[in-house]
Image (cartoon, rainbow, N blue to C red; front, side):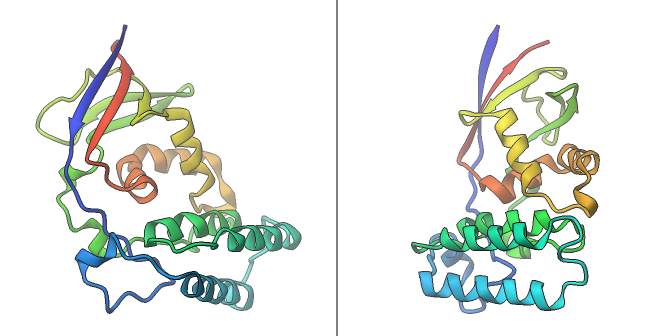
Length: 207
């Protein structure tokens, strides 16, 4: 039997991109502020120039022609004003394709100021292609241990995991390492990629 569980979480997401200077923004502004196309393009070009001129092994795992195409494709997405989190999602596919765990994009401290219990509260394991609930971060058990997760907020769990995989930086793009990090840091990676919704609607199958 399929059961839908609603877990209410209230939070204001804060994100500062690695390549955008936000010193003049207050925490309250970061969520709603949109940067102009010109600002986004300038920061993107700065990122590309820095990687192409200073990275020691930019094309070790993805050849130059493919990286050039990826740079150009992602740049073309900067056709309208974006929030910081939207810009973050545009540029992370680039760093993921470099295949270097030390070439990464990180959220600033302001993004994680809210209490840990504002993150996705369920601990998961990836077992034989399934996402299994193995515990909770809070004091109350949200769903039964051993439950199989199918959707979060209407998005298939397989789609969420794949999106995380495609945008996670790792040495040699090692899939086993990436999956281990998704298991270990699922709640944080979810927040980086999907923000902090007001509630989580989780569709799952009880054991």
